[in-house]
Length: 278
Image 1 (spheres, rainbow, N blue to C red):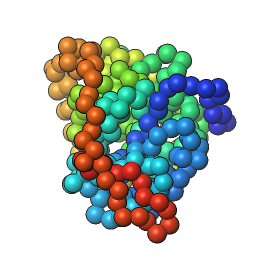
Image 2 (cartoon, helix red, strand yellow; image 1 turned 180 degrees about the horizontal axis):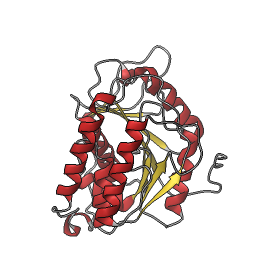
Image 3 (cartoon, one colour; image 1 turned 120 degrees about the vertical axis):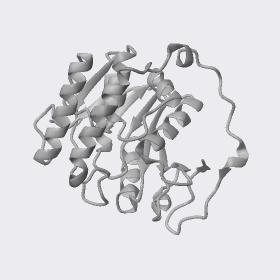
Image 4 (cartoon, one colour; image 1 turned 45 degrees about the vertical axis):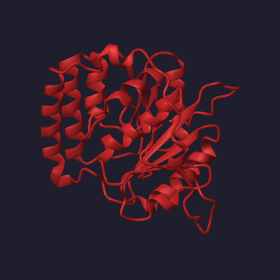
């Protein structure tokens, strides 16, 4: 699968790459450098989700940083990013996990899918094309089970419903800023968006195998994860997904208090990055 070349020509779209990270010091620094290299026209926001190591210090120049006071989990970290994107008027927000599995060069595939107008949320799938990415049998079975359940409940066919590599347009950013599931939210938001009338599509992408850090869903918790997400999906069929009265009309947000913006101590190898205390 050949890489997608950068989008040519001038664009007025403002794009934000959201990088949620928890104790990812070994991978997140290289990832952020690659993001700036491959996506120089995009802003990069690192959400340090209460890390106990020096993940936050790996942010390079021109990287915006939000430091959460304690670990909220992927749901809380990503909602923080979407709220930041909504407040600051971004047109597209792209989730790129801090463990380095998502390739910055593949971001263009997701953005181009949104620019085509075919969908509101573009999901990067590891399984739509023949790639070198491999999952364990247990994990792949769990993904297939959850994808089948989503198809039964909504009619939407997905190949990689747990993928965190995804891009959202302004309408979805607004919905996610209003409400976002807390635990392992990727399958849940697919179901809820589909029920609310948003358009979802998948894009074949290449991903790297995790080489550092620890997965948030280790093997022994795989079965519990599938059961828990299954229950959440069934319960989500009874809740009102993003009531239109609350998210359809966008009221201007006040600008962040300048007293909340601070400059951390300079890293010995690079100038300080912009940091916002949550």
